[in-house]
Image (cartoon, rainbow, N blue to C red; front, side, top):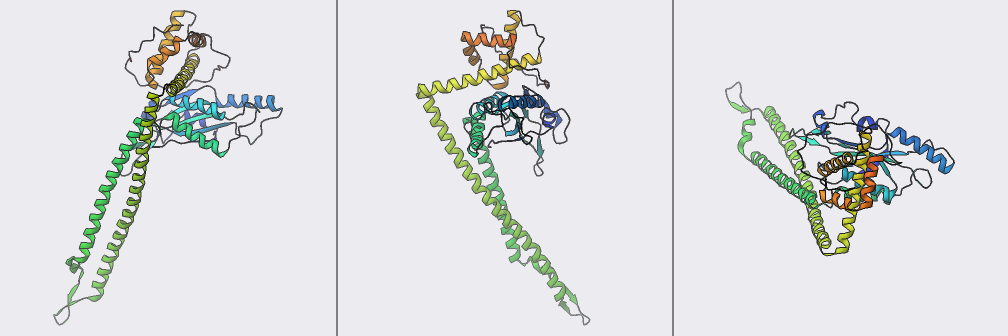
Length: 393
């Protein structure tokens, strides 16, 4: 399974769809509880800021045909987390100037397979982004290689091309598909052999129509017999042609699957080589560790801002309450995004970082806004047993 990302102009009803503000016929309502949402600002509020900044920077109004806010649909896995998408958002901003301010993970869309009658989920996420160039105030200008870069970033951040476990899983899935296709091919070949054997057998003698004439002599009715043979041969030829086309299509599909399995094996070999380098080269290991810590820090900051917006009236003057709230945020982020608690402990060991995070939780910062918050019921989760009471501020 491969990911993809494609930005287009955000529709007027994007928020209605993304945050499930109304019921849609094509979703499974009982699965909507699995969706996740995050937003920093409403689209309408962001557009007003974009217009004002454009006027301030360029001295001109934003062009009527400009697309200052765009939305992308990103293909994800069932286990893709909000942190993964925050990582992608951060890289899009760092490398392409694209600033994501809304994310919606949808796990309630899909379709019922007509043959197997099984539910085929369509896991995806919506990223709504500010497309304004902060240097000029105008909309960002991207070339074709920039859009190619977006695909690279999506694959890298979501681990859909580089994750070892994901690659092995897809490899097994492809091998299973090949096995099924081989079984279907074998069944088709048997069917064609049976049909050919029937044509060569004396089974068609039943199609001969014999009638007794006025002299009492039994004779073959040529017109009726010819018509019967013609109908039978047309039917068998049609079935043979259909089976032949199916066989050709399945052979082509088999070739594609085998090619994909070859690519996946190469990908896994590359991953093993990369892991070896990480384990043996301390410089590269340090760089990768730093990247991971930065992504955890970014996710933690966003979670703190979201918590402040959800609970603006919480009592945060007392240090004990503040520490308890920070522990709660870290625990929830750890469980929902599969982040080891040691990553948070490493961050809070740095006095300046810890002080900044507690200050952000207590006072917020100048960039915080108060958008509408979408509340979605969550599945009850078992207590993780994670204890962050040792975190110091």
